[in-house]
Image (cartoon, rainbow, N blue to C red; front, side, top):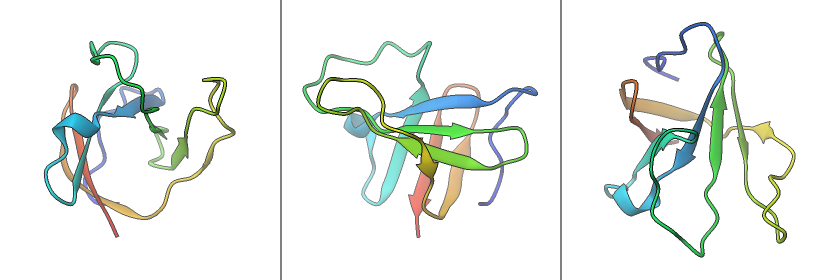
Length: 89
């Protein structure tokens, strides 16, 4: 990963805001504070801990999140407190 997003000493959970994707750049927003529009499609989450390790999860058929898995390699294109843009390798 390049450019770590701000963590403020705690793990941050980002949800994929696929409506805002820009070509091969995926846009993530803070899961707990961003007002996502309703969607029938589940939102992948990306959890980044203070050390920079990233895990990912998807909602299952009953909307509970699946077990977290290591995130595939990605580069951070932009990072701020309210947006995280990544390009998967």
